[in-house]
Image (cartoon, rainbow, N blue to C red; front, side, top):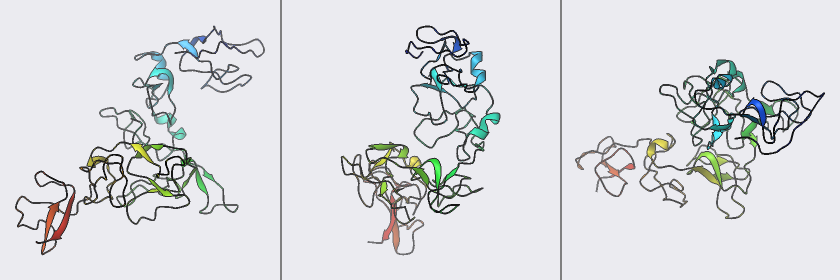
Length: 322
């Protein structure tokens, strides 16, 4: 797929050969640096940024060796935060080892998995396609000074959404704080979520805004710090990723908290999630014989909150013996 601009550019009379739509002899993954721009090895100097190469790059092409294996095609992909290959299907990726490219990848981005190879789906957190889960980037996310001069808690993380927060240098997410950004300064992001947004990509649909200028305190159901309401609907702005199973729910949410229902928001349930999906953190384990208390305290029984079915591992709570 070539950029249909029909434009060319010149500088000192030295330019790639450009036809009506794209650059001849240049891979379709490579675009122009900009008119009059020298650029670098990632683009073609002095050519408009809308113009790409004509030479197709397909699965098995040796040209894929020019790119790291976590860089995959743009076509049909929603996982483009780390870049993508113009004109290439989303399941065709580079073949070069990732090691030399890690200094360009933030420390909080790790591999999706390589045994078997896993692609970034664009739904969960950003990860590097086809890379071992234990391999992470080494670029330290920059801080933006927005308080008093110098480092202080009012600063924020550059190019990071306002609701995301770093775990701290050399610190990993924990069961109590599973969504913080690993090995990143303990600051919130700088990028505001616009109040016109309908939903936020890569965020579970049950996570909604805490409100403008309000940070999640760690008490009650999690919410998205500093995210407000949609200006059109008046409803809180929530995540866009559909949740269909308990495995997708944060481990801090107990299994007595279940979905409000599709498209429904409430105070003590998971917004927009089916009623049959509950948190994964066990309160108790039901047993087949109702007279047994399972692992509940004395004089209580483990009762399933789900409407029907055999004893299960989710949606359960300890209740007094009738």
